[in-house]
Structures are given as C-alpha cells and as structure tokens.
Image (tube, rainbow, N blue to C red; front, side):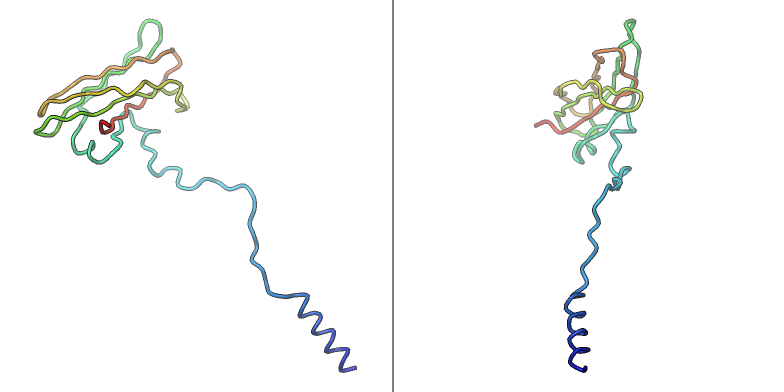
Length: 138
C-alpha cells in the first residue's frame, strides 16, 4: 500500500514537471507612435543635429496653382559665419498624411549668414499637406 501511494505521488510529480512560462502569441498594438514623428506634423524638419544648428526657416509660403497643384516656397537662412551646403526635398501628402509625391534632394549652397529660397511644386492636385526635409550634404 505504501508502495502504491509512493508510486502515484512520484508519477504525479513527474507529470507536472517544471512550470513553463506562458508564451504570448497574437496581434500587438504599436508602441511609441508619437515619439520622433515630427515629419507627420510639421511643415519643415531638420534631419540631423548639425543642420539643426546651422539652418533656420523664417517663413514658408504655400499657394495653389491654377491647375490645383500645391506650390511650396521656403525661405532658409544660414545661421553660421561660414559657407555651408545642405540638401533639401519636399514630400507632398494627401489629407490623411500619406506621401503621394516626393521630390528628389537638391543641393542648396549658403554663403556666410545668407538666405536662400527653395521652391517645390506637387505633381498632381491631390496634395493637401507637405513636409520640407533638410539634411547634411552627402
């Protein structure tokens, strides 16, 4: 009798074994969706810290052309006492913020403490928003 109880207890112990962690598998919601999303909200973004220290934008002008295309002009200013070169492009977006058209990067050369204007025109009349992006010249 004692042997039977011991055998049943040993069998139960062997069958339970160690507890395993629950593995969570399923659909997840994205995290940190509002961290570093300035391109979704701003009309102009500076893509790296060096450009952030060198370039500013006193004003942006947007107009609709007669055919409905969006034209954007930005006045950029060199904040430094040296010549610099940056690259600028524009992403045109629909009303929901999805990119529908993007221009290629163009080089902009600044003399010391100078200002330069850049102008972009969307390819179609669907553009409702835009983001002008400025990065270091490569």
